[in-house]
Amino acid sequence: MTNFKTADLCDDHSENVQVCTIDFRSFGKKSRFSGKIETVKVLDDNVLFLKTLESVPAGSVVVLDGEGSRNCALMGDRLAGIAASRGLTGVIINGCVRDSADLAEIDVGIFAIGTHPMKSKKDGKGKRDGALDFGGVTWKPGNYVYADEDGVIVSEQRLV
View 1 (spheres, rainbow, N blue to C red):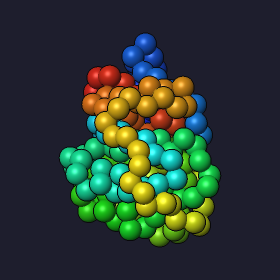
View 2: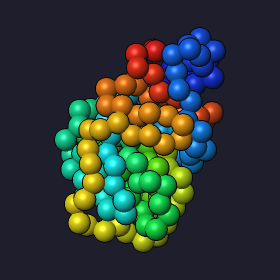
View 3: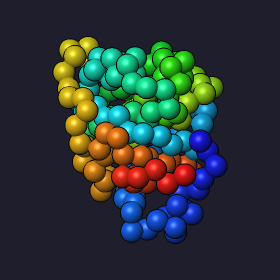
View 4: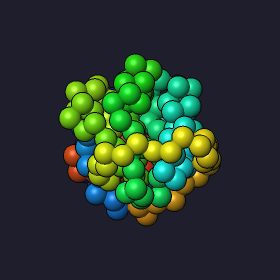
């Protein structure tokens, strides 16, 4: 669903939304996306993130807390292709991506803090389905996220 603007949602629901303070960059083909939040927390390791992409419901937005690390990329063209093929609307990464030119052609929303050419570790460490805290927002599974060119907001209830 892309018939919204985060600025308008903030105007209409200011008492019910949290606004993320991170200035994410858009890497996917979709610059506007929304959906129910699924969460993952990792540090420089994307195995649990891959498993999440392969198992969450279509229409979800996976929020990945990579602790803001700039040591490696947590997503590249292969994982973005999985997200798109499974019908996810977006991915928000508090970390880096790679293959950025290819990501721009993949039909999914991808917000991240930057790029890094190095792949991540493959140890399988991390946590899934818990509340995350970054960017001034508490990201809870089952809440709703709305992302566009102006920013990212989170609400406990569906807004559109």
